[in-house]
Length: 218
Ligand code: AP5
Ligand code: MG
Image 1 (tube, rainbow, N blue to C red):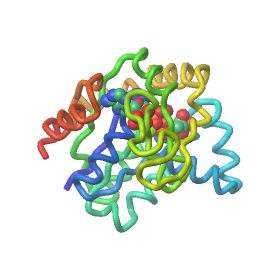
Image 2: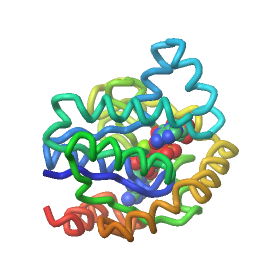
Image 3: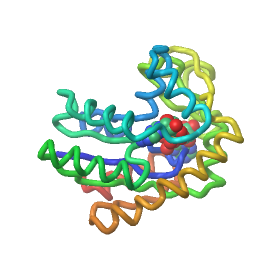
Image 4: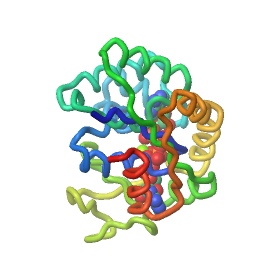
């Protein structure tokens, strides 16, 4: 059984690689970013609250995030394993996850850390396009990973592509700062726990995938 976390700076390819691993392993990729964007789209009270944080590039408060994760990984499709993308994002969330898994009698098997520079992160996020269908949210890049059929449509579901609201230069800069102060300490945290699998992220999508498969030992 694989219970995996994807770790890395914004734009490192966590979402891209989580989807590829999900198809390969037949277990769900659980992206907190996608869960929250879907909630915002539904315009619920919770969605309006969440939108303030996402648009500012800030982290959403822990009570909301931990509950969303503990409910999602208890769903049927995730009982055979899961790939977490975008969670945990700080030591507090990592400690919560340890507790959630312990209570469920489950163990974390691998933390895949995809390493890229801040400059590369900025290039990737500013050129990213995502599918506007919130159930799909496939991720493309105008230069590095364009859709194959129509430059403005999703290959997977045919919907229009769009730029994410938080992929503007100022918000990207702030998200990268939040990553360095809040999320980067998780690298040491999981290295000490003996589950960190580090891969070079500045290579083609397919080569990153090959490196991850080797690092996990699939
Ligand atoms: P989230 O949606 O998780 O966004 P993020 O953390 O900013 O990460 P990204 O999705 O930007 O990066 P990615 O690594 O997935 O990159 P991708 O694969 O798309 O979170 C959004 C917001 O939600 C947060 O700011 C926060 O407010 C809130 N939130 C979420 N989780 C939370 C939590 N746990 N706690 C509190 N708040 C939370 O790739 C990027 C681009 O590069 C794409 O265009 C892709 O095509 C391209 N690309 C990928 N791999 C390669 C490659 N090898 N070579 C060239 N291009 C590549
Ligand atoms: Mg993502």
